[in-house]
Image 1 (tube, rainbow, N blue to C red):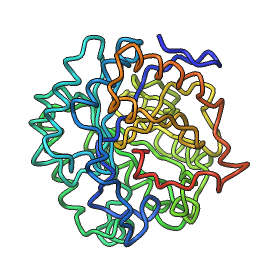
Image 2 (tube, helix red, strand yellow; image 1 turned 180 degrees about the horizontal axis):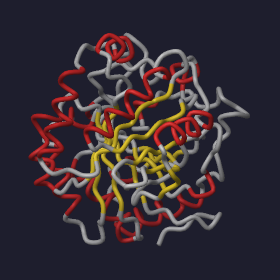
Image 3 (cartoon, helix red, strand yellow; image 1 turned 180 degrees about the vertical axis):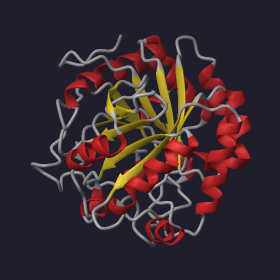
Image 4 (cartoon, one colour; image 1 turned 30 degrees about the vertical axis):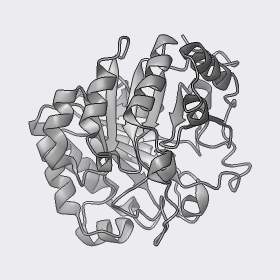
Amino acid sequence: MLTDRFGRAIEYLRLSVTDRCDLRCSYCMPKGFKGFEEPRHWLSFDEIERVVRAFARLGLHRIRLTGGEPLLRKNLHELAARISAIPGMTDLSLSTNGTQLEKQVRALRTAGVTRLNVSLDSLDPSRFAAITNRDVLDRVLRGLIAAREEGFGPIKINMVAMAGVTDEEIDAMVAFCIEQRFVLRLIEVMPVGNTGRNTASMELGPTQERLRARFGLIDGIVPGAGPARYLVSRDGRFQIGFITPISQHFCETCNRVRLGVDGVLHLCLGQNDTVDVRTLLRTGCTDDQLEALLREAIQRKPLRHEFREQPARVVRFMSSIGG
């Protein structure tokens, strides 16, 4: 098992397969942004599989495919099938904005993707369009239904809590997820890049207690929940998680690192510590050398983010490393 210098077991890799996205969410990517990575710098499927196999030999066993929007990467289901076949891999999941989900959901399921997280900040078409700068809410909702019908479960809805934007719609999203049998996760805005810092954030503690009282929820545990703290209905049919990196950080239990599509390994979302994996891959490294680099990288993982103390430290965009 990979263990960092603070005794945390690192078992989870968030794997970005593209920095492209077909939405322009206000808290993630600025309007008119064109600073995307050149495709020739993207890790190939062969390179990605090699890195994942090295991580698997070291004990990492959970992968989440991310972007940008990962479903924009051509033939993603082929990569998913290759990853799910790696010995030791126990969990392959996908984070998506849902716009491409309807037409790809069967191939993903067949390839071995078992869980989905879908970003959905609003059920109101005009508000959705204002947040994402795209009028595609109906397409996202069709994708969600197709995923449920294909047998994915649990399907988690990720909703970013923004003061004066989505806060008044939280109760409606709860009701929607109860009706549709989705798990809801509310997320505090992280000050990553100017887009994140310029978004009106809100702490989720008061919202959590209000929802507990209104819907009769109790403390609960959801498998694969990661950093979320969950409330559940008494009959167990509904779960809502609260991801609170600002008001109640969870760094002491962090079990993950992030690999960008450019082959840069990010050791903490809220710090600038990185390791260049691509250069080693493309200069003919052995498997032993690759594993040694990954072990060394994990030992450099910081103890915690400093979003409160130094909110302007991280200048990259969330879309570039998959969140």
